[in-house]
Image 1 (tube, rainbow, N blue to C red):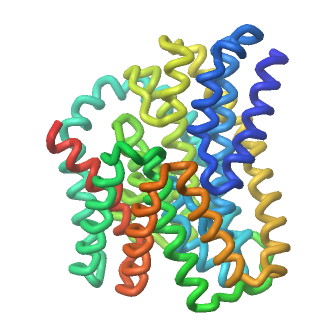
Image 2 (cartoon, helix red, strand yellow; image 1 turned 135 degrees about the horizontal axis):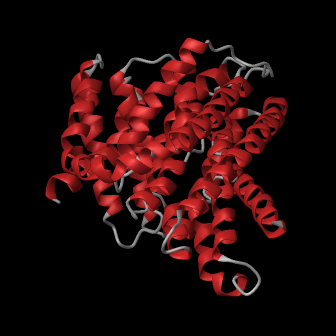
Image 3 (cartoon, rainbow, N blue to C red; image 1 turned 180 degrees about the vertical axis):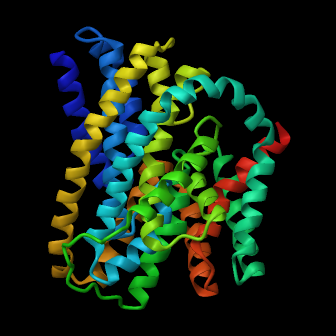
Length: 398
């Protein structure tokens, strides 16, 4: 029991660090843990190491939104939070935006744990059907998204530009961690450059919560269950695609969207652990490493993971608010224009060691597409073609 508690605490610490530092992904930490697992297994068990990974993954799901919203430095799961989050930041409500995503993460964790037994029973039945129909489901969802877009032709152009870049990036063997330069460019550096050019100033931040109604939370919950259920058992589809699916189902205000993103980030992670047990197929990097540590996951081990997820989520909720308050109090003390430039330089310097020198080319092209999207006045959700198009192509040819 003591080793389990230590593993949970260590996972929360590791998830906090990886969540707050742009470019430091939990997959890297999990890989290092797996490589050195022979050493750790002299003192503990595979279950304890797996519990560390669960705690780390859930914690990062919460903390990821802090640099995404305050600094414009996203990963693939938080990329879509940048636009509404940045708007709240410019209204002095950056802390409130983080509170919305954190609330979503917490509720998403609870919902995922509640519906987990249903997924254990249903996923072996519905998985083959979903796998065959997924390409057409995604195409249909995107067509719905296009119908709601005013600048349809420009949106389609952005979708295919980002999609072609996504296919090239994901199939480029020389690029490690391909999603880092891809999403840093599309959603991060492009926003930073636009903020620098426009000389954006950040107002004093109001450290009060943004009110959201029970009806809005119910809407987010229903959409998160539908979209996360579709994507959690299929390869190559993650939280970002789930959010895109939700966007196509219903027009959402910015508050609901941020809560929804939080819900989806934890739900897809937790349901990937359920999928590992139910259909023996890992759907996230974290589930892959857990599957390597525990080749035959038992139902009792799955319940242990779910219990740890709830405990960790309760702690991570307050950690995210704590660091959001620190950011809210201090971000106005720094000239935002130069902060943007500093973060941009940091991300460029970080790209070669994380993804290789060729990734700088991807970063440059992705940044250009992100800037073009802003100039066109097209919704940034269409840049999720960078992942949707590769997934659609994958399912059409397999």
